[in-house]
Length: 340
Figure 1 (tube, rainbow, N blue to C red):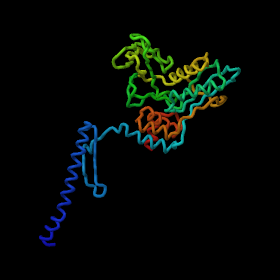
Figure 2 (cartoon, rainbow, N blue to C red):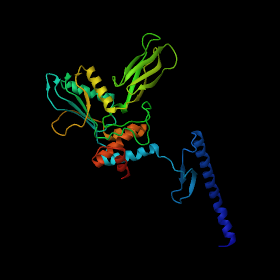
Figure 3 (cartoon, helix red, strand yellow):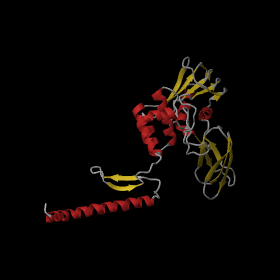
Figure 4 (tube, one colour):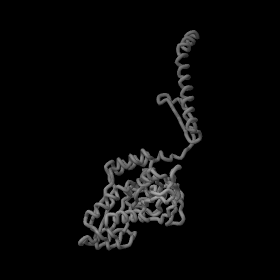
């Protein structure tokens, strides 16, 4: 090819090269603007490449290593669907070892959990309605809690111990309300008086009420731990407003479940005279009184993904370990299932 021909080709392709360069510069500016807008500098890595040529179009911290954080939820969701399937449901079993006579359950009532991450107040209302509907008016035996489907490590290795910090989930095979004790304060009729406080834990913790009713201002609530089984709640509610709520992590999930269960049974007129005991239910000799089934797994995973729910993710991790390896679910064997 002659020198003149080469220059002719260069002149022919020059506009397209300049156009591609302008596009690249425009993309650089727009993506940099997005980063600055959301103050994303060191916390994000971006690499945009042409899939055909492999040419790098935009790069920012592309070779830096990051903690995957909530991105790991995608792996957990995929593994859950792979091992359990979209229609899987968690069962919470209520078992007895004796008769129900004239409204009196003369036996122990066993509750066996399977790690249901979605069991909340509405579910417990349905459970207690079913138990009362079965004719139970008194329980003279013990309430026995079996949470052996998971091991006894309550928090993951990346967590730390702070009972009141709600962002740090605590795990158990027998969990309730994401293991968060919810406190709700309503204004009282008199300005300056203590608010009406509803304890979602039904006495699981001793709660000291220091929330006042005010005629104006911004409603707020703050909870402080005094000791392992006592908290004090401060705050303000405003007359004429709706209730204000806050909560704290339950350090003993099965005990919290039991407290809420017995509290709701009492509201339905069912009296309990036994003790609350934690141990593994025997494999034989028990009769099924009631089984609560969760929503389909695909619905639970929607809660996990759309809300980036840490509690649900950790529950699913342990449940995967238990199902895959046939032993108590743990963070370690759950991680093995994910790796596989």
